[in-house]
Amino acid sequence: MIELGNLFATPKEKPPVSISLFGKLEAIVGGYFLSEVTCGVFRGLWNSLYFDPSGQWERDGVKTIPENLIGYVDRKERWAFILERYREKFLGDTLEYSLSCIGVPSLDEEVLFCTCTDHLPEEFSSILWINDDFLSDERLPFDFHLFDLIEEGRPYLNPKHFSVKQLVQHTLQGAPANSSQGTNF
Image 1: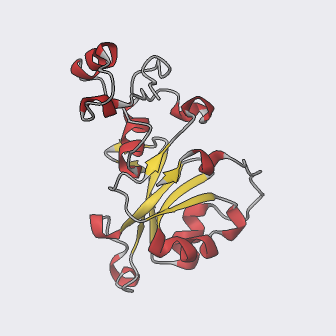
Image 2: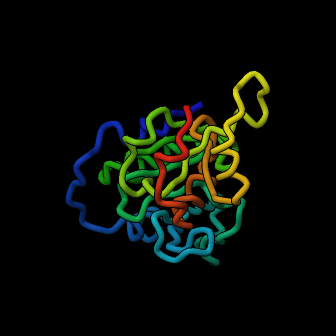
Image 3: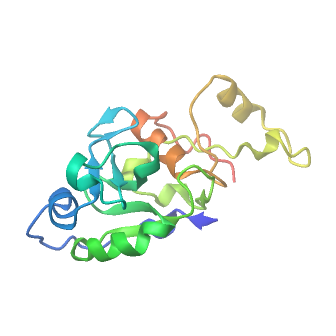
């Protein structure tokens, strides 16, 4: 499991660079495509990062297919989630941008957790955090208030286990604004 707070623990000052991250990855390094469309949202918090190691991209461009999706970079170029097998290459290709980068084994597996959601950056304040473990663990007391929120169909994340894709989708859809109400550690 990977603590989400580690991504934001040491904010880095963004150094001046001579070319945008888009330009560097797509035109100079090659094989990358940084898309401003993520989960159907244009210019949301996250840009989808695609990479084609095959070399086919020189002729046809990098295809935005699930097999080529290797991670997400926030639009202000501060943070990135990258598949572990591409992390070292990505860090080497983006060294001058001082991105905080977390390598993950999968974008779909629930490998992230957050022990202190109140300390996350403002961009995550709209997420409703609900520890729903009481639904599957009969040793835990049943929380009727949280159950009502879940039954209403309100989108939420369990701070004890969530995936990168779940986090990205929740920050893009503008989940309910009162995140402290549902917190149940």
